[in-house]
Amino acid sequence: MAVGRKPYEQTHLKAMDDPYFNNYFHTFFRCIGDNDCFLSRFLEEDAIIQEKGVHEIRKIYPGGHDWNVWRPCFTDFAQMIFR
Image (cartoon, rainbow, N blue to C red; front, side):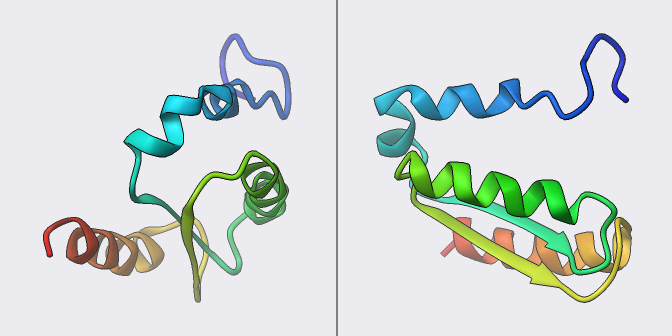
């Protein structure tokens, strides 16, 4: 549990209620490993993101919550924003 937060608190998703969000963030990229301890929460957030109509690009890589996932994730993200 994060300091000062209740378990499963998702206050970070409130930013998506702002209509400006979808216009400003042309690339909302999320990624996770298929064996990540936060995968269930990630999938729950998918439903919320779709419900709010946010244009999302998301990828699931083989692996857990570690650099074996984060490295290819960063590579893919960097290629998208620097094309």
